[in-house]
Amino acid sequence: MLANDLQYKGLLDSLDFPLAVGVWPVEPYETPGNGSTLVECFVEGERVVGRALHVGRGPHNEAAFGSNDLQDEVVAVILVATDTPDDEHRSIAISRNHPNYLAEGRFTTTTAGNIDWITMHLADRSAYAIVNMRFFDLRAGRLILVAPRPDGTLRFLQRELPMLSHTQVEAFVAGLSEAPEVVSFFR
Image 1 (spheres, rainbow, N blue to C red):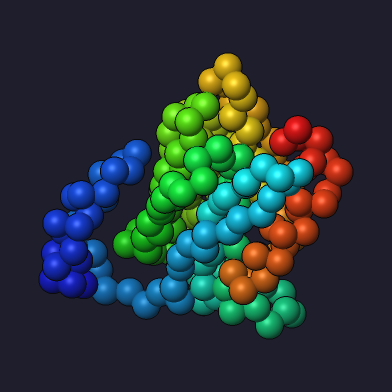
Image 2: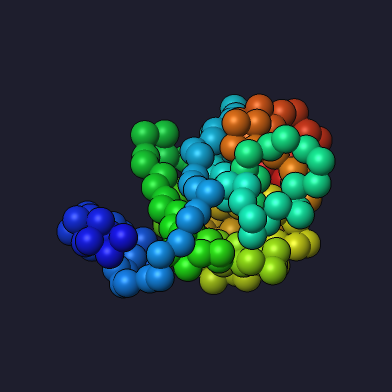
């Protein structure tokens, strides 16, 4: 695994993320997979982009899935209103701390600059996010909305998220564009 990761060291070093992505040896492990899905919707004509982070179903988290047949679980969704129509919103999710999973990334806006974020989903089911130094305990809600304001400040809204697979999250986010609380928040 170390030899594989070393192949990508140059690419990892070139990423402009909040934390440098290191390469280190780990004990061999089997991961059910993890990743990030780019999602997008429009709320009253305003573009909202986000990242949905997911962790695969495996022996370390089987009990959390109950009787459903989902193969992975979206553990966090961060959505940001952006006024930059052709920007790249990048992220990376890693399993090298298995059964703990980390992800980080960046959104760009012209009104508030960079919106940097980090998420942690731990084996004990605790989960946390930091968005531009604002701390979130994701057990209080795994959906975070971020609205940059014209004065450069940020507004945040944290809400519950139903258990979803990464294949279901795009439809869920699209439905948020009609939710009165979401429309009011981004207005």
